[in-house]
Structure formats: C-alpha cells, structure tokens
Amino acid sequence: MRAKRRIIVFLAAGLLTAGCLTGCGESSGEPDDYVTNDGYESSVPADTVQTETDTSKSIRREDMKVGVLYISDPSEGSGYSYTHDLGILGMQSNLGLSDDQIERKIVDDSDTKGTEAAIEECISDGCKMIFSTSWGYMKTTAKMAEKYPDVYFSHGTGNMSNGTNFNNYFGRIYQPRYLSGIVAGMNTTSNKIGYVAAMDTSSSEVTGGIDAFAIGVASVNPDAKIYVKVTNSWYDPKKEKEAAKTLLDMGCDVMAQHCDTPYPMTLAQEYGVYGIGYNSDMSKEVPEACLCSVIWNWSAYYTAAVDSVMGGTWDGSNYYGGMKEGLVGITELASFCAEGTQEKVTEETEAILNGSSNVFDGELKTNTGEVIGNAGATLDDAAITGKIDWYYENVVVVE
Image (cartoon, rainbow, N blue to C red; front, side, top):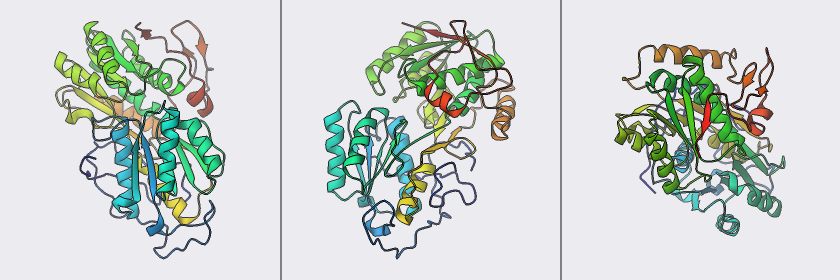
C-alpha cells in the first residue's frame, strides 16, 4: 500500500453519530490530500463490551476488524479503489483503529470464486465487517451475508440488501457530475466533449452520470455534444487508454470519465486539451489539463457504518448521500477556467444544496427523441439509481 495520506473528512456538526446511515454536512470539494478530522469523537465508549456475536450488539474497539475488497490496487493511480481506500484510511483515523484492524483484498469483481475466497479469508482472520466496493461483488456478498449472519456486510454501488446484516451504499454523484458538465460546456471551443464510460445503458449508475453531465453541458452550451466511448469493464487500463485516444483523435477538447484509471486525463494533457477528473482530485497528475474533478468522500459513510457496528446501533438500512451530506463534491476550479465558470458553478451548487435543483428536473429529451419525466416534476431516487437506460439529447455514442 502507498503511504498513508493526510485525510480530510468533510463533516457537518453531529454528522457521524452511530446509526447515521441515511445521510450525513456539505463537502467543500477539496482535493484528495486530506487531513484527519481530529475533532471527531466516536459514539462508542472505549470500554464497550460485546456480550454476544450478533448484529444487534456492540463490539469493543480493540476487537473490531474491517475487511475491504478492491477491484484494483489502491496504490496505483487516482481512481476508484484509490478513493475508497482514502475513505477507509479516514475511517480508521476517525475511529482510532490500528493498521492490523484493516484487511485489504484485491480481487476481480467478476471472479465469483475469488471473491468468495477473499471474504472467507477476511472472516477467518476475524473481520467483523466487510465492505465490497464494486458492483460485481454484489451477489457473492449477498450469499456470504446469508452464510454468516453474525458478520456485517456493506456493498458499494449495488441494489441488494437484506435489512439485517447486509446493506448497500452509494451517493448522488450525479449532482457534482452536473456541475462538472457546466465546467466542460463553458471551456470547450470545439464543442466536442469526450467521455470514457465503463458500462453502457445497462448500468443506470454510469448512464445517469453521463446524462447529468450532459444536462450540465447543455445548460450553458446547447451547441456542444458529448461523445461517449464504452469500455464494458469497470477496470481495464488498456481499453480505457484506447477509448480516450479514440475520442481525442476525433477532436474532443475536454475529456470526462467514469472509469478507474486516469488515462483520459493524462492523455488529455498530452494532447494539450482539458480534462474533468473523477473519483479523486486528478490535478496532481495533470495540473495543466484538469479543469476540476468530481470526487467521493467515502470516509463520510465508512466512519458512520463502522461506528454504528461498534456502538450496536447498526440497523441494516441502505445509504444514499449527496453533496449536502458530504459524500460527493467537486474540487476547486483551475485558475485557467473560462471567465464566468466559477460564478455559474457557485450558483448551481447553491441550487442543489437548497433543493431548488435536482438536476433531473422537468421534461428531459433523449437522443432517440423520447421524453422522460414531466413538467414541474423531478425523477425520484429509484428512477435515478435504477431506471436510467437512456442518453440525454446531446449524447453521441461512439462505436
């Protein structure tokens, strides 16, 4: 593992109390060289005694051990696994856990047997709670939760849970995606914006992010198009690099992404154009190209979840936080952004935080001519997380 970083935990007052699993303060959108929130106080007394090993009793701090499954080595790059590990490090610091109380496993999320073996190893090593961070782990995690009812399982990005020892967690990443679309729309001169996507319209997570980005672009630049190249993999460095090169060779002068590696950003800098980073602040890799990054602050959830398990207040509920809860955000804009970009982003950020904008508002036209939604209404969470199988009108899929 790469050396521990200073972790910033963006917390609102009283945010991470045990049982706070339905939303948690506003993210300031700072980059990923985070600092520890030394003021955080766990709700778990140091001398708490576990009387039984079931999912309704507390666990002593010194007896707590957490397992985490990653699809790639967090020490490589600035992407998905790297950002999740920042959240785990933040949780560890906030709750005062030692290094040997965290167990990391790197396993392909399409490898069912490998995933099962990794979870078995975590449990054999004494893990009381296991986070599986990628979509493909979901069904195996559900199976293992049934097999081990006294262990807590929490799955990222999925839609399965049992309401007891197995939940899912994700966030309103579409909110900062929309804001980053505004940035892209105001900083393209070719009106060609590239987007490397892990999955096609079968994934509402990916497609919803693309659409939110596209809505943001259209709100400031109706002439721009978003060219999407799909890799059909959550983590494939070769395909991600090839997809980015294809889009750049088409003349895209702003690159965005929903993929694990920073190749769309590093290639953008090589081509002398702009990029919108994802997962963590990618300006450290591409300071001359990165307009901003859409980032996750997973420590907001990981701290709350582990704290609730130690405190005996875990209730098995699912978690879906956003900018208001401090889970997602957008970094500070680069100094070379076009004039007026910051003002527009600030205006729209306030609208999201005060509830006057939900991004997917009103009638939304697709790129096939259909109309989604209704005037005066907004898509609900269920639709946004599981039913977006369409592209917004300014999206073009590149085969």
